[in-house]
Image (tube, rainbow, N blue to C red; front, side):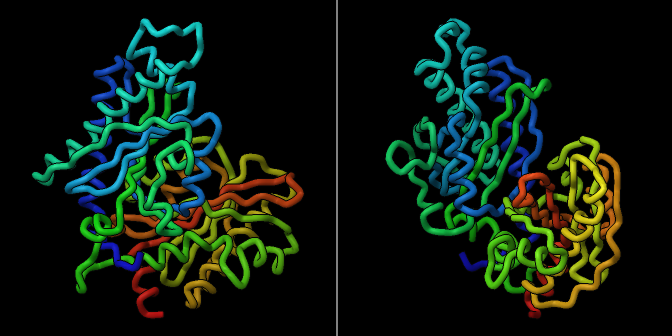
Length: 369
């Protein structure tokens, strides 16, 4: 996909996504009596292989509904089997719960998702005054299994997928599932494509950032090994385009510690490495990981990046992220949030890696490279 994403259109799309997720949550609560709310809603770019891996876990039930009309693509609702069973029995109390998860449970979940997704897309259609036609739901253990399930052409045609992800949860977090809205290329261009004079992000830039962990001639892990002799593998999961005021919703409130490196020259941003546990080596490793990430970004974008000294922080993850966002500037409507996991090849250390950037500034630098 070669296109530019209009930041103004992203804002409009984001608000419609919130309305759609709220509509889905309301329909679900009315249908099952289970109190639900939208935990977060975000636009993200994800590697197609990561989508397949997520939907092919043994405990996952996925329901796919194709869309035609104003939005062309598909909505895939994903939940674990325990959540599916609880929802089904809330919807149909007479289900044989002693028999475990049965085909009757699956049929009930199919109907639940059909009603819920209709609430999602109706919100979009009403805002735009356009029609969206839903196909009958298809319930499969793996939504993108070549032999048993729905094969997504979107995943076959591209290495990365542009998707809207909404998480809906219950107050006790016992039921949690996600809705993915996958759009085809034509719809993506209509929804996000930028005019020549618009403030925009090049989609190619997003693909470059998402693929940081495995690009030639070296990966972040290779860079880290060269500079610190710390042997580790780095996997970048997704790149999210998240409204600044909701970014902290994408990370937990758990107490954590980490290292923060601030990018002092444009593109403005920060790299963060989070650890759950602290010992004598993690301060040094955290500082090395974040510094290596900044160096690798500079190499990929072919720009000189002046970075501050690593700062060790100890607080709730959400608070640390909020502090970083505040430093980006009050005019930032969106933040590019790159998330990944670093694991030592010895298996004795893992940490979460974040890169938070100003979309406008990094887009300007990409255009001038």
